[in-house]
Image 1 (spheres, rainbow, N blue to C red):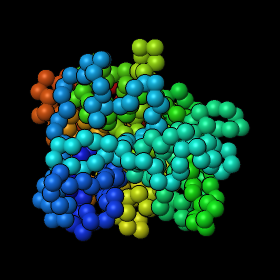
Image 2 (cartoon, rainbow, N blue to C red; image 1 turned 180 degrees about the vertical axis):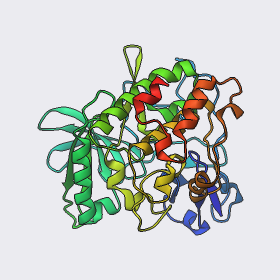
Image 3 (cartoon, one colour; image 1 turned 135 degrees about the horizontal axis):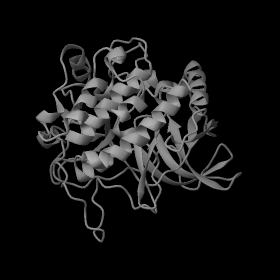
Image 4 (cartoon, helix red, strand yellow; image 1 turned 120 degrees about the vertical axis):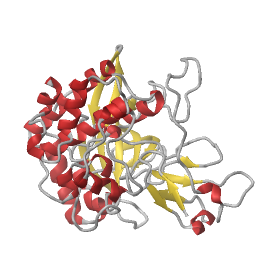
Length: 384
């Protein structure tokens, strides 16, 4: 039996026996989203054919009225900070149930982490761990605390690599790049392995992925200021010799400030640090970094990854933002990744016939098979 990921559409392997365990969970091999399983009310979970499909219906094209309660897929109110790049862990329920986050399992509210950070609340579950709102007891500031699970936390060599990548990412200081403060470890009193975590800027808003799910595709006028800021952030990172390697709509955070949307790119350095564990479902042992739907061909092939890979990913982001679709689709993450090695992308105008040809040309140049045929810089992309 298989489920379909609500975010990327990839098939999620599922053994019916899992449903008989307490609080059963599965992980999407494509995008890393974690789900709790719930059978349709009044029916047993094991063998229940209603669990085979978890693909959600498309959200309405218009935003909800300001006075209405937010829908399950909508972001929290602006007054409640949301940590960057982590989406809530939903419940898979083909019976039409609500989507809700699950509580944190690593830290409890009020717990002091590493003798310095007091956890205020659990925010969300992501592909690499859990994220919390926390208070820095020394500096008396509020920040996001993100746990790092898997190989990046358990392997000493991986931890050292993670430290190097985070150190590089901290050199990028730009208003459109999420600030990373520190990398630490929390020693657990019960003898369990220490918990590796990051502290970073706490942002209030929603990801581009969440906005697209809430409102549908954006217009070119809505997209242009977002592109300008994202390209400025990428140019700043590339000038510091930092390549993101996992740029996607979930990593573009939208913060409303005084009636203007500020784009903040999150997880610089984080993708590389957790490579071997996070994407083991795609390849094993090769250290390939990237989410299949956004990976450049050279990433799929395990080649040298340069700033051109971020330009490619930005092309996928633009394609998705303006059409509501992705340039390549397939039944599995691997099939999606391999398809870009053998076939050209579907032209964006197939989905949006009245799309300005200049935007289509820019997107397709980003998606060129050969890195040298793409835009040389993100600024060049924006100028196009």
